[in-house]
Length: 292
Image (cartoon, rainbow, N blue to C red; front, side, top):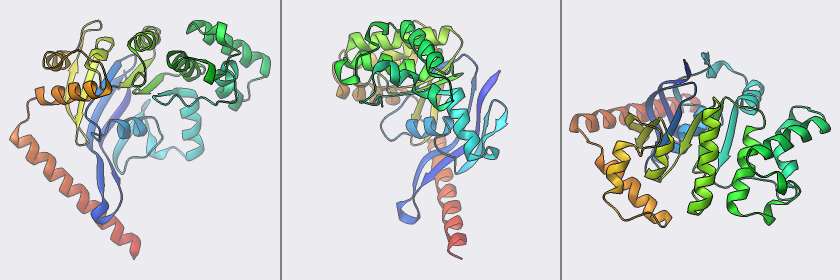
């Protein structure tokens, strides 16, 4: 059953000559309990897509259905409640509060829901046990390694039992050992029934996904099913074109090779350019109406 459904969704920033098309008539359907990896070079629209799906941003055009409900009809207060109760966010920058200890950071979303102190403490401890961080519950973020901090961030994202997990480059700042730990956590989350959307530059991360999307210039250029445990076919082609990953630059080189491995048809390029002109024309028309 489809939990996320986007129909010709576009996102445009700026006005006039400064207009940027971040997403361009994206069509996407994601079923419950899918693990979707999203790849693409910087500026391809990955984060913009995650922000729209995660209700952090609204599409400029198009229709977004979440759990069979049109998102554009949901009021601001209700959107915030859905984000809190339905969607768990994990970011590359972690976003833990430095003055709160691990237990307090994980329990924080429950305090926003009005859960009592003893109840939220117990739930937070259970979640920390799940991610292997219970022995660090009274530590502060500054006392933890990068991998441990990310595990705490994942625990906080899971505390409300969200149906959807959105992770934007969650292993980007981690070493190989910490990255493996974090990805095994996401694999466990997926096995327990959550839908996972994960943005990555690293082709090797696709071995955890059941589906891989490849983005460029605000569009989904390729969509392929993948066998969990194996690197996605298109991503595997990129690995053969480069040396083993050592740095973020190697990751970026890898994703460039991935995109080069995707066949580009001239007719498709013309269609994309035509869509962009249409979007820019519509945006300018809206700006003229506002001036009047």
